[in-house]
Image (tube, rainbow, N blue to C red; front, side, top):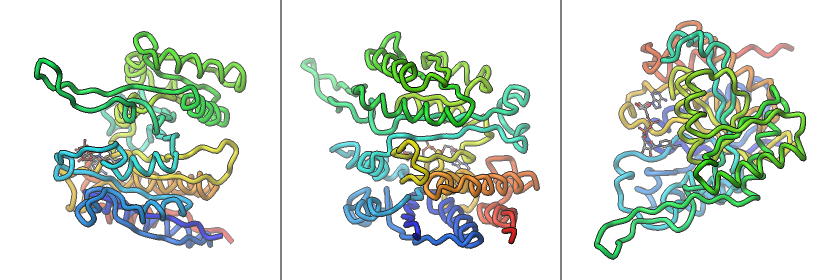
Length: 366
Ligand code: NAD
């Protein structure tokens, strides 16, 4: 059965890196005789300008019907400064997609590639061999909790409110996803919270501990407060295998950890509804970076994060971990051959990096 892939390129560098990722994806699908149907639609600011909405109901219908989504990025100064009311979903196409498709498990693999060791702002001896996953809860927490908003107080001040809230079932499902991932890796799960000062953190820690004890005794579990976790990522990142945390902490820790790989432009992600044991899952795949308005339109964005996201698509939606390895191998070969974009100290354009990756895809052996 041909897989249906919905491509939502979005804003800024989104269309540039998504086009690159689509070229690599089509090349690898063709080589391996895999069928796919591509559909394209607007999202984010581009969609707002055309329709007055950040994603339309029609695009949501396509998203529900697709096996997976290849997403670029959304936003930019033009739209970030709009005074918008309404729910988080009505203010972001990406948030609506994550919530309505229940893509609650956001996987952000963090790796120190040998080819880029000297380029990272971290010392090579600290990061050599780093290979862990930040698993971020994506559909709950402070990004959605009610009450929220900016209100006027009795003394005439404005007051901004956000609410951090997690239910037991929201914590359980992301904890199980974390244990499942760790089970097939080095069997170590680190859960990150702020249980020393936050009630939601106390519940988070209690639920993760119970699930570990009752369902995954073979996985070693430890807990860190988020401030310590940030320090440990910088001090000794090799200690981690899978790190599971909430929406806000995961957002911040994964950008910090991104620098281990040399550039935010290198980081891929997969957002899954994580059906344990399912070989082919529905997912949304996107680079971790945003729309990078400072470099958009110049053809110099690093497409590696988007291309490696296609690797994750092949692994989780197509059930072909071997093809994910091939994409990674091709990106590493291109880097080893000196094809580096500006963020990695080189001068290769987005198109040149893409061509180098396609050229480095292994031939199919008959
Ligand atoms: P950003 O990730 O867009 O950029 C941060 C820095 O990294 C910039 O200097 C940028 O030039 C650089 N960078 C990012 N991607 C790169 C790439 N592929 N190659 C080379 N350099 C790259 O973050 P920001 O500046 O905080 O946000 C810009 C816009 O993107 C905002 O509107 C924000 O809301 C949006 N955003 C969207 C997403 C998303 O769609 N998932 C995520 C983060 C930010």
